[in-house]
Length: 219
Image (cartoon, rainbow, N blue to C red; front, side, top):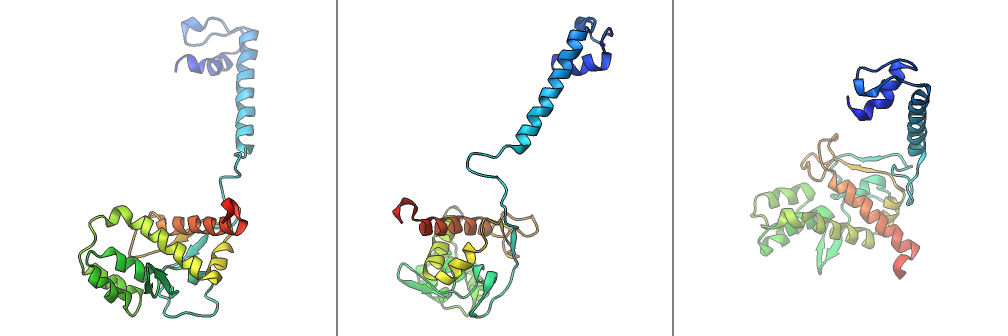
């Protein structure tokens, strides 16, 4: 307890009373009214703060969060829905003149140190097979520092090259994207135990797709 607690001490003591601190002196009606006014102002300030909306909009999304559960999509379908937002969904992309069956294939191929091994990974039967191949090869020394930028580049390529999947992504509105990945606590949310970078980057790319559609910056 110190001088910051003066209003509370005054309310407890009441008019004509004394607090346990000698230097407070006798509580006058004026002091008591001042303490009441202090707490009334604090209550008013807290109410206004709760109702305050930042200049660029509310902090929380108005669309319910969406969950992208861990899965193993084997083949493309006409209407994949949210499954199409998974990195291992077979939506082929071309990056620097190289074709990959999925974002996951490209990610794992680019993660290895030996360029000659990348074609083998790109030709893997599915995304889990591509990951297994990459795990058995030397990793790029700087991979942990560049992997988020690489994934961002690959996701941009995916949604640029697959307009239908871009529409699926846009349909999530401003929802928080929760991406589960049992193989990675970095990329997956995993019941709140992971960093959810996949979900965060999907939200970023979604915003970029919407920006282009709105013609911001003339794009």
